[in-house]
Length: 105
Ligand code: FES
Image (cartoon, rainbow, N blue to C red; front, side, top):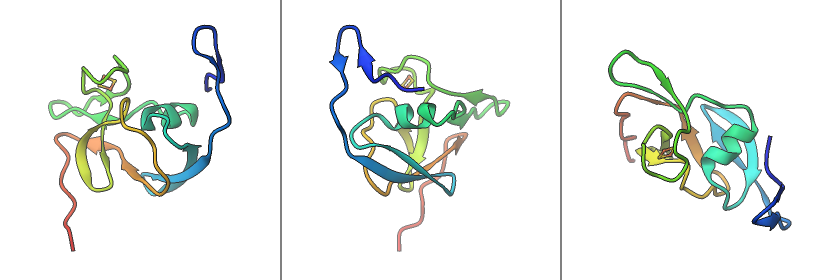
């Protein structure tokens, strides 16, 4: 489930495949693509749970405006994954409520 040839943007050039972690599971995506894109391509639809009611949320606007796609990335909560480029070795976690900062060593 990934667009490789777009009618306006054209064909996707060769890109480097990278590995990242999603909720402790190894995953693969393309370097520089939005984290949300890599997750959606892998079938992930729930990115966070709301503070009130714990309702699931996923990509809505896909342009960095609505915050429905925020996740904890490398220990930092509230990262808008629809506009954050994927890098090799990233740790991505489903966010619950406001999330929590990871303790630094
Ligand atoms: S989907 Fe709206 S900010 Fe990412």
